[in-house]
Each structure stands twice: as structure tokens, then as C-alpha cells.
Length: 111
Picture 1 (cartoon, rainbow, N blue to C red):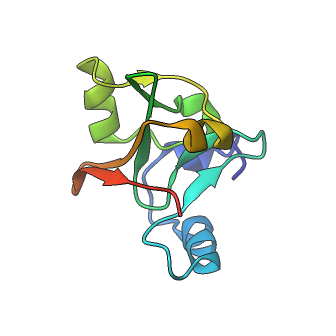
Picture 2: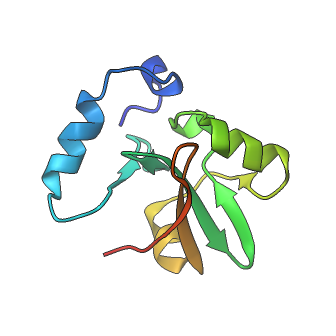
């Protein structure tokens, strides 16, 4: 995903980039997206939360993710902090979750 694509910062019906990536892994429930800068951004259906050394982190909007409503609430409450994340951070993580205002907080794992 192009982190500088302004469309990524707005919730729209423009789903083609997400659907294209989801089709690449048809057996997966969801797919983690990575920007052209090598930064983890989000998943095809929600924001990502990553637990490292006991703290929960989410990529900053500058990485190229949608500033989701639930993500924003969790950041505001101090339950999530922003940090640039890489794929290596995901494999080193103590926990993963997908955050979506309709589905809430859902534990996740890499496969």
C-alpha cells in the first residue's frame, strides 16, 4: 500500500486495494497490509494492535492506515499508543488484535 495515498485516510467504498490483497490469501480470515516504506499499516477489515514488551501499539496514520473510530477511541483512552511497526515487530509480538468499531477488539494470530 502506498502510505502517501490520501484515500487510505478516509473511509470510502473504494475497497479494490483491500479486496485485491485479500484474494492473494483466500484461506486467511484477514490480511495484514504493509506500506511501500515497509511499515505495517492495518488489515483489510480493521486497524491493528500489537503487544510488544507488555504495551499495546498501533501504527500511526502517517504509516498509511485508516484513522478508525475504535482505534482513535483506544488511543485517546491510553489503551493503545502509536508507533511505526514493521513485519518483524509482528513476529516478535506478545499479542495481536484487529480493532474495528463494528466488530470490536478481536484477538489475532499470524499464520
